[in-house]
Length: 196
Image (tube, rainbow, N blue to C red; front, side, top):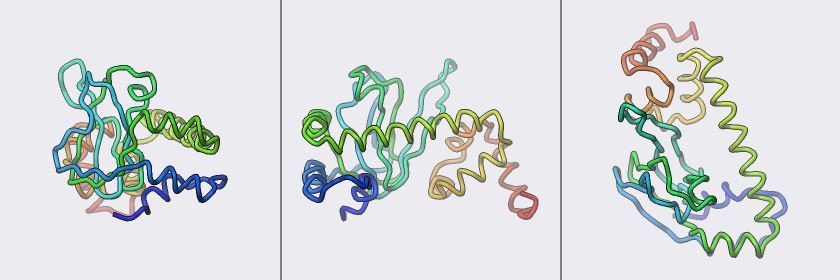
């Protein structure tokens, strides 16, 4: 594993080289196998991960006990359950590996230590959090304003690895459609690619 994922994640113009070195050294390598649980509902998150290789997802169980995918994590993204980690409360979500995953782990106590020591890390954190908030807001609006086909195409464009490796059922629940509808959308896109 290289530091590439860390470099991409902590790409912030104000970091000094020595600050980045200290932040990078605080992360430890961690490997997960396909199907491994990174965080289980009811447990409190004590770390976050930066995904170097692989694919993971978060999901909740709805009132009928069905799994609903809330997020897909692809390479160079932060695998985190923000509420649980920073509010120190049990997670409502599960985070599971869809493929084997190679990660960089940073535990909560070390993060807190660095956060208070390196002002630029605080600025990076604010910047990262506002981007995440924007993305979540965008996604929630698109669930109502875009067609299922357009949402699928956006996912294909932004996170093609999801389409490649995630089971149909997980993608369908993320897009808010049934498995059957998603199968139909995929067939239509294959037979009429120019229409969309």
